[in-house]
Every structure is written in structure tokens, then in C-alpha cells.
Image 1 (cartoon, rainbow over the protein chains, first blue to last red):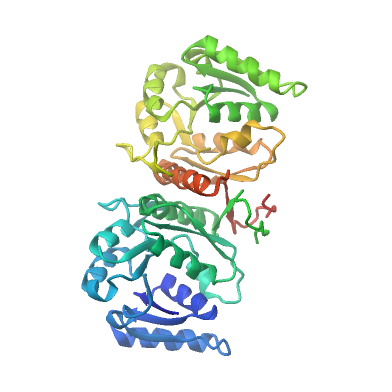
Image 2 (cartoon, each protein chain N blue to C red):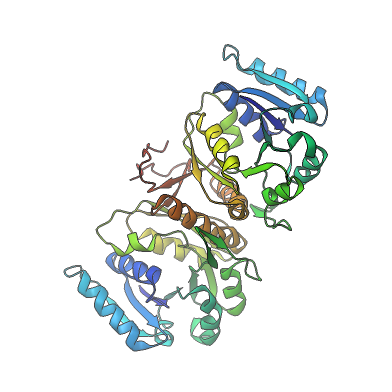
Amino acid sequence: MRVGILGGTGPLGRGLALRLADAGAEIVIGSRQAERATEVVAELVRSWPGRRLRIEGVANDSAADADLVVLSTPWEAAVPTAEQLTDALDSKVVVSVANALVRQGREMHALVPPRGSVAAAVQSALPGSLVSAAGHHLPAQTLADLDAPLDEDVLVCADAEAAKAPTMELFATVDGLRPVDAGSLASAAAVEAFTAVLVTVNIRYKAHTTLRLGGLPGREAEPRP
Amino acid sequence: MRVGILGGTGPLGRGLALRLADAGAEIVIGSRQAERATEVVAELVRSWPGRRLRIEGVANDSAADADLVVLSTPWEAAVPTAEQLTDALDSKVVVSVANALVRQGREMHALVPPRGSVAAAVQSALPGSLVSAAGHHLPAQTLADLDAPLDEDVLVCADAEAAKAPTMELFATVDGLRPVDAGSLASAAAVEAFTAVLVTVNIRYKAHTTLRLGGLPGREAEPRP
């Protein structure tokens, strides 16, 4: 599977690219400037020799041609980026990972986007696409260190099953990530906002917290690291 | 310590009363009708013979005389209840546990209260009180079963350290609950809203999910049940 990561040169985009590529996916990192994407990809591949990572750096519009597309720009750029690529993204699964957050002293606050969530705004901008929201709580730094074990639940929201199922399958390919069905895109508002709480806890405890839900039946209870 | 639980006859109020009483606190359950509180307390104490639970049932205004007060009414009643007890609650720690939620088909949605959170509205209604927000994600049914092990993080938000510290100490008395400093009362908006996501996951998986954060340094990593 070929996965495009739009705005993939940022911390979360890099981390996702590395983990998904390490799990066997073919990754296309997109950026507004193709040279920037090429530079970042060269750096990523150089950092992990022997892992046979298939990552390519291109312009956003080329990355939008992939089978599935992750929208990983800064949150203010999510809707404008989507709007420029409406045709390429039509009928495609588009995973929104951005959170509208603002730093306020020693904590992070969630902003309330006009449609409740970034993901809902992206779905409105892309009425012909299958938008899901997922991956908001993943710690970018830990993702980017392929030697670090992961033990994290990935809450996945989408209105269409045709958006949710492929998104859950994508994250399930990464060792240590457990996709959890968190309902429709309406849930994305609370999922995105909760990232602010996790970052605030990180600031308070100088930590990289991960989210795990206990008590899900029929799912293995692995020890937390 | 004497803990008052206003509106404590509901599922979360009962569960909290049982766990805190079992941990040694003296509990006063308040209700709009004292007889209702007396009935519920008789039932709770009868259910757990030999546990020496100190729980009393009274009217809300008497429960507000306790050392620390938990506001556990239905969310619509939180502000009206607080407003009626402004004097009794003055200078006191008031723990807001309510979430503004609405069931929508097979999921739960978070409503956005005009001040962002129920806790912020309570603090506005009680400018002389020390309001904290905590306990939103606790599974009421599991709390109410004193034989069931708990393994849950309790996110605690408050503007004043004099509100936050006693709230964290209170929850820390219960075996299996780990209080986590989640910042100021501004964080309560996302903490409350996230309850909708957990309930949605519960509906989807027929589960009683619990929230645990991994990666907090210097805190023991207990296995999840």
C-alpha cells in the first residue's frame, strides 16, 4: 500500500512515515516544496540504515495520488491544503491527524474550531472523500525512534465504515499501536481537544505520556512500559 | 475527613461514596430530598456488611457543611445546586465531576457548555470556593463494586493549588486510583468532553473502559487488568 503524508515533514508526519514504512508500507512524504520533502526523506533514510525503508519525498499534489492519504500539516493549513487537492483526494481515505492547540504558559489549551474539530472541517472541505480522524495522541518523538517500543491506543473516528476500516488497518500494521473504534467524526472534537490535556501532563511531568484504555474485552492486556 | 457528595444518589455519587468510605473517609451523601439520601445510604451500607462504611444520608445543604464537597448532580443541576449553597461552600474545596453529555444513537456526544466546561461554570457560580475538576472518567459500576480492582488515572484540574492538592490527595486514598495533575480549570473542557469518547467506546465494545496514561516517570507501571 502506498500512503501519502501531506505536510509530512513535521514531527508527527516524520514519525508516522518512519513507523509505517518500517511496517512495510510505501510512503510518499509531501510538502509545499518538493525539495524540502526530499531533504527530510534523505535525512530519515540516512538515520535508519539497514531498515530498507521505502520513503519518497515529493510535492503535496504528488503525495495526494497515493492509495490512502494522511493529512499531517499544521492544523491551520489542514483545510487550505485539502481544498487545493479536492480532485486528487476524491473518493479517497483521508486521515486527519491535526489538533488545534495553543500553548498558554505551562499548559496547552485546545481551541474549538468553528465546526468542532479539524477533522470535521476537512470532511466539509472534501465532501467526496472518506475522512477519518486518528493518531492525535501519538508521541511524535517516540514514533521517530524506531528502536523505542510503542504501547498506545489509537482512537479512530469516521462517519463512513469505508473510511474507518482502512484507517484502523493502517495503524494496526505498526507494532504496539492498537486501533480503537471511537465512533463517528463527531467524536473527533473531544479526541482532538484531549491532546491538549496529554501535552499539559507532559509539560507538568516532563514526560511523553501515552494513552491506553483498560477494560476492552477480547483484546490482550499488555503491560504498560 | 468528612466528604460531602451533593447529588450523591446517582450512579457516580454512589460509587465514589462507597470507595471513599471504604478508604476511611466519613461520607455525607446529599440529595434534594433527605429521605431519598437516607434510603440510598441504607441500601449501600446493607450491600457491604462488615466493611464498616461510615456513610450518612442528608439534604444537600447539610452535606455542604462537610470539609470537602463533591458536586455529583446531573450536569444540568450542577450550577443551580451550587448557587443555592454559595455561603456553605465559600472557601471550601468543591470537586466538579459532571460531564455535559448527550446520547445520540450508538454514541455519546459532548455538549459544549457556554463557559467551556461544567467545572468552569461551577467556579463562576462559586467565586469564593476552590473548584477542581476530577473523576469524570471513572466507571460508576466498577466503583460501586468494592470487590472489583481499580486501575485508573484520575485527571485533576484546578486553578488554585489549594483546590488541586486536596483533590489529588482525596483520590489517592482509593486503591487503584492514581491522580494526575492535568493543569488548570481550562483543561476541564477537554477532560469532560473526553468522557463522551470513553462512553462511545464502551457502547461499541460493550466494555467498561478505564483510562491509564503510560510514560509518566517516577510512577509505578502497574499491569492493566
